[in-house]
Image 1 (spheres, rainbow, N blue to C red):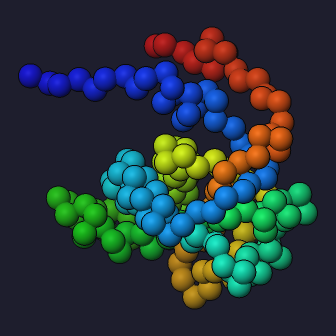
Image 2: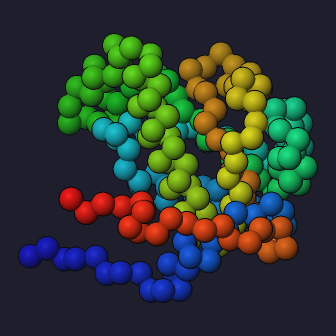
Length: 199
C-alpha cells in the first residue's frame, strides 16, 4: 500500500513561503558546513532527465567579492558586497557529459549532445533555474534568509568565474540572516482564479 506524504505544519509553510521575504541587508555568517548541508538538500530536487546542470559558486572571500563587484548593477552592489555569502547559480552547457553517471538507466547523453545550441540552452537554463529555486527553499529550511537577484552583467561574471569552461551564469542569491528593516511591504500576488485553470 502506498504511504502518503503528510502535509507540513503551518509553521514550516510560513518559514518556506508565507512569511519568507526577499532581504536587502544581511548579518551573521554562513559557514562552509552549512553550505554543504544546503547543497546536499537542494541536489535532490528534480530536473529534466536528472541533468542537474546547475553549478554553484559560493562567494565569501574578499578576493572573490572583488571579482564579483564590477559585474553588479549599482542597486545590487553594496548589499551584495556586505552579504556573508552570495551564490552564483550557473548552468553547464556541457551538462550531458555527466549523464552516464546521473542517468545510467538510459543513453541520455546522446539525447542532448547533438542538440542545437538554442535547445541545449533552454534545457540548461530551465533545469538550473529549478535548482536555484530549490536552493532558496533549502536555505530557508536551514534557517537562512535569501535575496535573489538578476541585476548583474552575465558576461562579466562568466569572465571572472567561468572563463575557459562551458558554464554560464543564470542568477545570484545573497544568503545570511536578513535585516527585517531592509524589506519592502509585501507586493500582491495574483489570486488563484487569475493565475490558474483547472482543466
